[in-house]
Picture 1: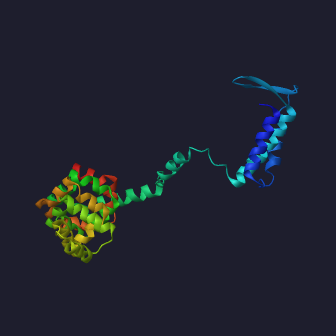
Picture 2: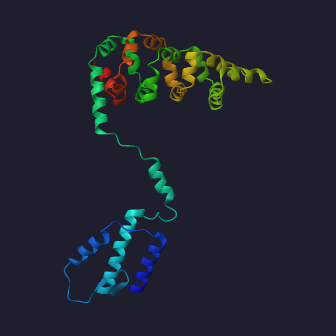
Picture 3: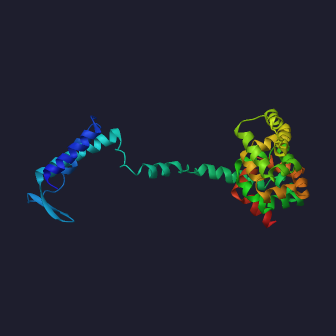
Length: 281
């Protein structure tokens, strides 16, 4: 690479960036730093490259250094130029899936809330209820106790009651009925619209009829309109748990109702400390 080629490259970059002024005093500061470097007696030095070396004069070095200082100043004001074609998808993907970091204060507050719950009267009563303890310790439920939306939903007595509904179990154990639920949700259809669609069909669909009945029930509708609860009910192990008499008793127990209403219940469940406490006692 010759001095002329280097200057042409710098000029090309400057032309692409367009007019912009560097921050005040930026160039002067950079050049002052360069001038403080010890000078050698030679008039040039050899810069090695893979295919040999070239002599670069001090004048050319000063010229490129000055141009580089200007470029850095312009970049500081306008931002660096975009990456080359072909890398946009990679950069975009990295940004898309980057999750915000959890602040230390959030961890501390969560731990404090979980600890407060584990030392509360509500937790003590929960430990004394064998059915509630067995229910919360079940592996089919464990994954969902890590989901904020699920934990918020089961604070509702209506939702807890609906989760062990025979009608709900029948809907989610039927492929056509599950699809009918998803179609109704996507279409933002009310129960009346679902019933009308069933009535207008040449052959009345039993699956649609089941879904229409479910949407008519306020408690069941809460479950059907919650994406996390629908996902849970589509899980056969979770559905079997909810259909059991033990789960029905646990979901209707006062100990569980009082526990899930506590502020620290979510923190204890999501952190795994609730599960650990249930196993250890």
